[in-house]
Image 1 (spheres, rainbow, N blue to C red):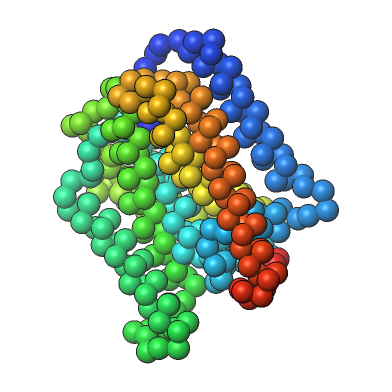
Image 2 (tube, one colour; image 1 turned 180 degrees about the vertical axis):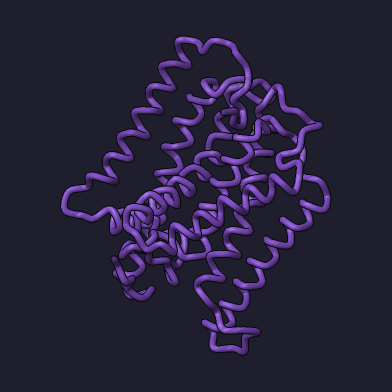
Length: 277
């Protein structure tokens, strides 16, 4: 399966292997730490770890498990991962162009729907007149629509900034069929949440966390990648292992600092105390 920046058959250097092993160790340690946190449920661990990312109101609950972010953000990150998966599965990981204009306009429209729903929800929370009563399912669905566009942005930024063999003639999503595949995967995610089964809800909660950490890691790794002279030179994933380690450490530090700041504000009485699962 081809993913962004994964093409190229050059053998990884010893240094790249060492950094890749370090990255694998960090990710494995992080997952084990989250899953096996003594005396704290996985649900609570994820909630507190992502406490500074959003207000964590209107969270989805499936199978008795509360997802760590609000419905809108959960939908956005789950849809982003689904979209990147479809792009990779269709062999478009090295694409350097947006989808055709009609498809791009539909994706833009989905983002605007999320923005409109967010404004409507904010007006309701402020006690002002709204176009319709806010609903958690609409928050989820509009967030998923925006997640498609977020995935395209992430891929194109990575490819154009770092990739040597980016194909400027290849589109990330090239047809209505491929957009339909993304929507179908999103439909399966909605069905999994609606099934109300812990066995399905727990992986989805973890995937929401992966989406948050992954996005921040991508942002953070761009700077060390450029500093290491990788701009327009990447042909294999192992070349990104070194900046990815730096990016992951910075992303985790940022996430935990935000969580600590918000908890401090709540303890100090500046924010309402959360309803911790």
